[in-house]
Image (cartoon, rainbow, N blue to C red; front, side, top):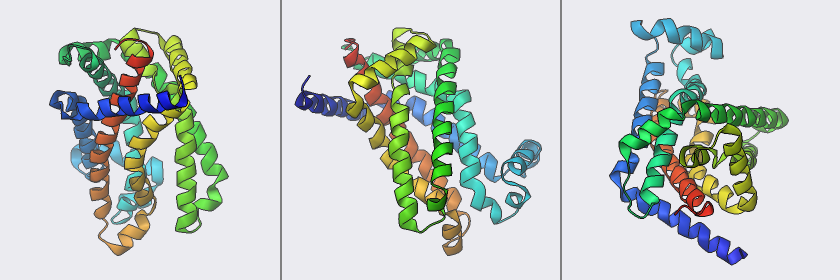
Length: 280
């Protein structure tokens, strides 16, 4: 396939993903997951409530220390605390909603275009432990990468805004390179019934053949949430200029934008997987 044909294919797949936005039923997995994220955020903000304190106070102290238990210091660390909680939530529940969405897009992109809600949810639960295995490998690789680059770029993080911005762009750009190896693993397991190893192998194979298409399928949704990464890292500045509660509002907005970004990501990756495997 020539470079021009690959570019045309990229735009064709991406537009197919955008066209599916008008199908309300396809939003359900993303809406449900965003609601759960919002409830988690609320629980973290009201961690001192009687039913929550016994769980969240020890966790918060363990993550960031006693200082985070007091106002307004708590809001300074809220992005970090929510990020850690969201990571755990992704492994427990997120993989169910991603696999459910993958199956819905699979059924939608077939000629009859019927999104099968119940069947998709059944498949998602039946593949849970396989998907959990993929998620664990992916998470360990990405966490290892971000830990490494944070150590390398430690000086940049304490510099001016331009240096911080350059570091975050580099971190995002190179992080997507690693994520690409796992981009099609869920689709391979949910749609083609592969196991963890063969699913990862298929994903790597597709990625190697379609590096640039995959890279931009992942990059574009991440650009939607990139501004929130910068804002969360400048929580101290925002708190000094506004009320501490502005951090809570930013995180709510981030949940909504992430929902849209995840929709675009899963729809385009699923559509491209179907094309690559000759299933469309």
